[in-house]
Image (cartoon, rainbow, N blue to C red; front, side, top):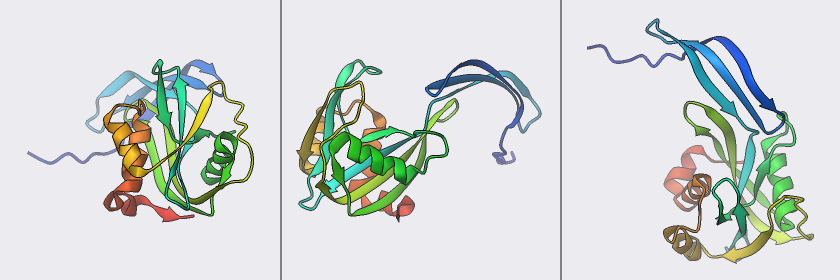
Amino acid sequence: MKPPRHDPWRVLETRELFSAPPWIKVQSQRVGLPDGRQVDDFYRVTFPDYALVFAEQEDGRVLVLRQYKHGVGAVSLTFPAGTFNDPSEDPLACAKRELMEETGYQAASWRSLGRFVSHANAFGNAAHFFHATGCRKTAEANSGDLEEMELLLMTRAELFAAAREGAFKLVSQLAILGLVTHPELGKTVGKKV
């Protein structure tokens, strides 16, 4: 038996089924598979890309937000994050803006941890992860978000305890926590920016 080649699928046609800019777009694609088969209705759902920041003060404490997230219908711990203002916005610029808006902090140093897609087949959106260090408060938070946010300063031990207790409801939050706290993962994708 020959091993699979893992060739990309070919998009033969795209039909837009629903669009509510800038928040969501649903498409149906007709795709051609490498073995010659065709799928007439392969659905793709897209949301705006976003930046997610693991931000640490000089003393090592991490900036964490406690807020209600309507998608999960619960209060969750989160790291500062937000969507791009437009698709052409630079990921680092978005990360810096969101850190300032949600916490009032700026960072001395930034490292990109990579770009990750949230849903393997439907796409969803891309998350751009960043590790910010040397954070200090320079202004008052002013996010303009719908959620009420409570800023917490937590040690890594407290973050791990919160994760074990289920306080993080979003997989992206656990993913960035793992990338930053396990250097064997973060070194493979990260770069200083």
